[in-house]
Image 1 (tube, helix red, strand yellow):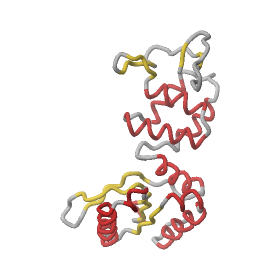
Image 2 (cartoon, one colour):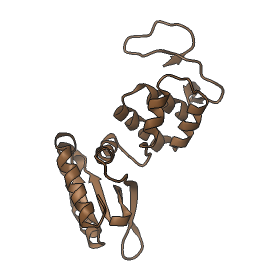
Image 3 (tube, rainbow, N blue to C red):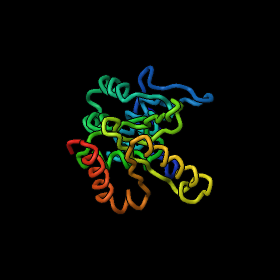
Image 4 (cartoon, helix red, strand yellow):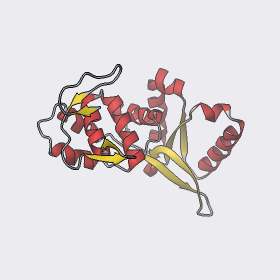
Length: 206
């Protein structure tokens, strides 16, 4: 929470003494809140890199905020604490991520030196109809990476559709690397190797 002046915070509430400039706040159901850009500005300056990118990805996805807007706000506060850290992470923010694990997957790949993937790739069937969106991938080499949450494994109907969907995608000439929580968080090196191998096989210079 941001307030000007000194106040004793309630338990478990972080209270910051900042002054919001005109245009940096708005109202939601009669409650004054920071704009998405201002919220991203403060979170990006104060959180560790990965936590900050997860938060900013979520803000961008939910509100349509663009990283460039956060950069423009940073230009108006050149002496703010943590501004260098904020600027360095904005290049890795992508509102196409629909969950923290999708952000973690993307960062694991990018931080390993792989090319930055595109998010939310629309896939069309032979009749020209959209039938799926892939979490992230590279159109040039027709390689996709899909994060599967628990419901993909536990729900019978979802599992059946996943199998059909994968068959359709592969029939169109795409290579799909599937990722679960265990692979992402416990064996990230294996994940990177699988994606790198898929890209190399497709002709990418990685």
